[in-house]
Length: 313
Picture 1: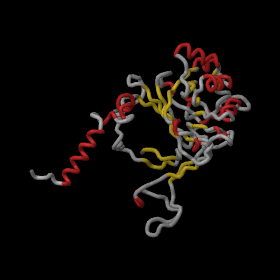
Picture 2: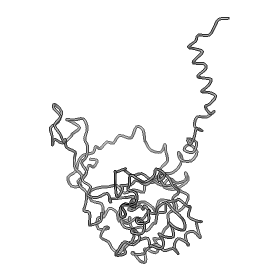
Picture 3: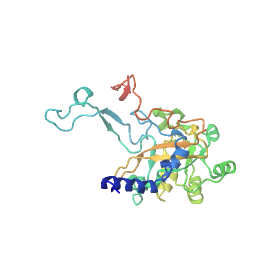
Picture 4: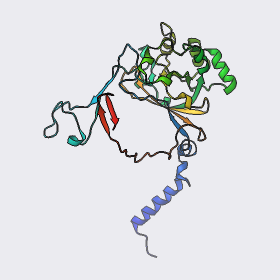
């Protein structure tokens, strides 16, 4: 009997061992089946404002400026210090952002924003990534009183219709304030819809949520910002400047949470994405838009002096 080629024998052995540990369907590995069965067909809704030089910002900080990036050093035969990078000369372009604060646009405030003994933005745990999302509406109250602040009774009324708010969830309060975004005058409009201190305490101490969020750029319109002060000095984060809450189901969705990891950062330019059931009327699903490769536009980005940023022209 002729012996098997040693190399072929090794390949056969590896193939057999691999087959014995691989599931019948590779999509069932680990959490891949969760993605394929639940997340792939879900509807994704962006709850984030685009940062531009003219968005509303608290008057204490001032606005941002955008500019084309310039070389910071000489690179012999390639670029001189101070030259603007261009597609024609260098093959690429970049932007120079002057951001006067990390409290800009849609944000995630870590408690160190007010209380330095608590975590900064880079110290928030990775477990913040995905959570159940609850959206509590109060547009009807705000329509009668623009400075209305969410009360415990509003939360109890919500739970009577939708069930108990899940522990560890993120609760966003829908007021309609962001409908006028990006009008810079919004930042000066007072009073504005808020979240009352008693409501914050109830959500955290009784329902044990992860954090809450709201559409305005502050938690409440009290002279001392008592709600934000209480949150930060008790180790709680919060979201501000949240958008598009009118497109999200009040229960049954998830929220994906992303933010840059600035060392010692006291605020975060955040990206919040609602992930809703496949039959939800808003949002877009995987496969409904071009993703890889991304679509090519018949208009190119050019820096526009009037808007102070790159726009498609």
